[in-house]
Length: 394
Image (cartoon, rainbow, N blue to C red; front, side, top):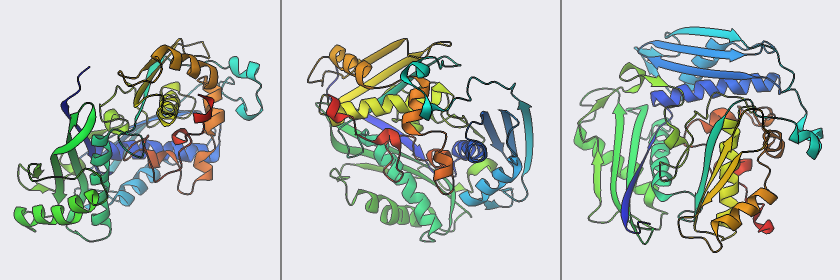
């Protein structure tokens, strides 16, 4: 196992076209579940210059205005440009009704252990969850810092500290490791979009980003940039307007940003745009929950949990654990403990995390909040899969 290396992870702001699509898709999921907690919906979105395309499959048991939701999200993200905004963009939809099925209409709260066993998954998936002790959120340091920088870019724009910024932005952080522990900040890259060319000029923008984004983010971090840290701010020059007018977006194209910044494996399927019946979404949350509790219990410094599901079965056909040589006990022993104390069945996951009801219980919805800055490792949202309430079972 490699001990000394440099690793980079990237993040994007909520105005990045891919993340805009994720937010529209999850806002639609929220609206369905707010009206009917047993709703089934799968939604994908694509954006380009002046155009939004929404493809959805759903059971027709809720009254959801797809175009209004999309326009609301675009406006809330902050797009006010003449070539792309929520008022004038064209929205195309391709909507198809799903056949009515009763097998998903179970009340997981009232099911017995035996009844949960009868609820099978309806799609195949291999999902991953990861945790490590590099940060207080049990996340790898590169993606943690990249998310913080991306969020700070949006914050200084929203609060008119840097009012010339537009919603689109990208960050990347490189971290040097020694003996698999973060050692120093190797590099920081920030791409920030602005309304007009030369207002401000590139030198002023670089100064503003350093003072208002980079320095505040690292103020409370243990490892800070040093004199040898390479900092790149719009290295290719001014990035004008950004957003769908410059590059297209698509739901589910930022899986690494949604999870662990590729420091660990991540699932191949999109996480956004799916109701809780989809095991390729909720299984990833369950895997993160298991991995985080293993690390919180100090059984390992790093833990990756893999769950593989097959159609027609309730339990994963395979549960694998990898601790990368950091485990206090063997990976096989940890796997046995997970099989004994964690419920990885579909209905069990929905029940424990209350996944059908979270959009109704959270003001402004729930799943849309996950669609930018990560589905895991969040400290600004009370996520059930981020709890460490299972450490006592080990």
